[in-house]
Amino acid sequence: MNPKFLNIPEPTAGMVLGSIIGVACLLSIAVLLGFLAKKQWKSFDEYLVGKRDMGPWVTGLALTGSYISGWAFCGSTAVVYKVGFSGMWFAGIWTLVGIIPTVWLAATKTREFASRLGAATITETIGRRFESKGLQTLIAASMLFFLFIYSVGQLKAAGAVWYAVTGLPPFWCLIISITIAWLFLVFGGYTGTQWFIAVKGGFLGFVGLLIGILALVHAGGFGAISDNLMAQKPTYMALINPSLPQVGVTQLFSSMVGILATPVIFFTMSVGFPHNVSRFLGMKKLSRNEFVLLCFVVWLTAGVPVMLDCSSNGLVARMIFGDNLLANKQWGADLAAPMLAWAIGGVPLISLYLTGLVGAALGTLSAMVFIMSANVTRDIIKLWRPQTSDKSMLYLGYVLIALFLFLPFYWTLERPPALLAIFMGFAAMGLGAIFFFVTVVSYYWKSATKLGAVLTVIYGTLATLWGGWAVLARNPPLLGMGTMEWILISGCGILYFGGSLISKPPSRELINKLFTKETEATASASKMAAG
Amino acid sequence: MQSVTVDPTISWVVWGLLLAGTFVMTVLGTWLIARRWKK
Image (cartoon, rainbow over all chains, first blue to last red; front, side, top):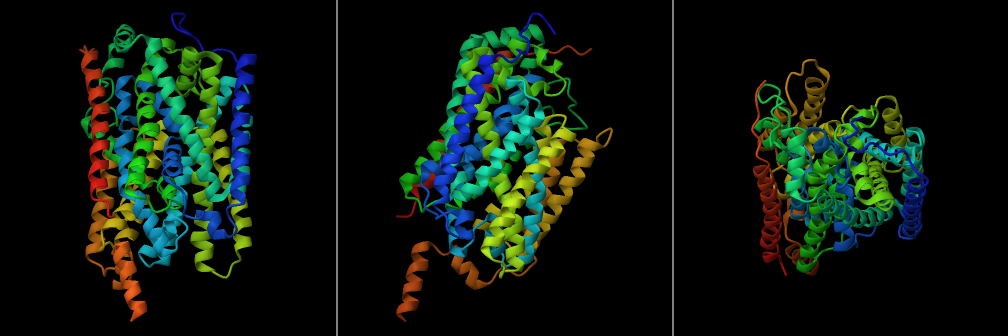
């Protein structure tokens, strides 16, 4: 430990009490919303998608809540704390490059397509868009695989901070988290999840903004941060870290190949993430003003707080703690964000932060696990065995939710990922590259076909697996994450468009149903009825 | 060992431009979509 800097504090009675009160309030809200939402659904369909009547505030805040995960709220600060300013290229400085286009491109189209096709999940929407049960099954399996990997990081962030603040061992931190998530998902279904994530999104936006501003004030402004870090090590203030390789193995925050890949990753992962796009499944039909309001809500609550969280916050944490956080071998840099909250705002702010982070982990995890469970019940079993009763599907869903919460819990305890942000970034790359094309581009391109989508899913999944070996497992690495992203995205794009162009487009009837404007479709239907 | 010259002002200017740029992108894009919104 370097005595020039602050050390990790021992948990105090105030920190434990504040955290317990904060998380108890969060849990109470989750249970309350779950119970209220229980009255909103009466069938399996309504359990999965609600009544498609949610407005711009709930939808916008839910998108923020879904997007601001444990990674955004914790891991992104950790990367900047660890490597300096250059870490912002990997961290969420590109948040708005992803999240706002998600609203532009996916909000109204997801609602329209799912509603017209009578689909309750994103996977079902895509399967029906391409008139293919096989594709729906393939997508369900691929989505399940990626979401499973991605869910691991959510637990790690929550466990790390719970440990840091309360001193409880990780086992108890994680088991409490997943029990809360299971109870909430079983009660609330889609509507309850949406409500809870919306509340969490608003709360995170507020806490994130508060910490970002207080950190800058505490540090004494940009000049003071620069002076301090230049004295520690000038490369912490460099836009490109020269200690990382700039040729050969292209890391996301070193070479230009990696730096240019990062906005593409953030764009595709935000637009392509099923748990983001699913927020629009239950949205009502929006007016123009409501659409503008939706964009504004997302910008205010997701954009600004995360941009501070993933840049200046990490630098201020470095300024206050030096290398001291890295002395903790188990959680290391992941402690940067919570310790920063403690250093600048004492017990009240770290309690708020912990509550926000547990909310972030539970909300995003809930959204993912809900989709994973529906991937099996709705997108595979109900698809191939429609006579299966809704009650059986609901009960099976409850068991699957428990299973999908338990598996990442176990894996996190047995083999914690070395660096949260990079590990999760890999699953994010695969999910984003595949589903950007298969979901969102398919909303706009009439000629997209089943073959193009199938090739994209298979290639994207295999390329991600290979990339995991080539980048993370092989020693020395064969290539860097920057190059890997370009291999992924260009391969998915070529196969999606190429496969679609050489195969037969979907039926004329389906194209008319999906790509005719709603007013024209209604007029046409009325004319047919009158005729 | 290679010496490194770092100018923190440039780093903050680039950071500020990114923040401002994404804000302008948000406003412009939303305005462009909203003006073509069907009645």
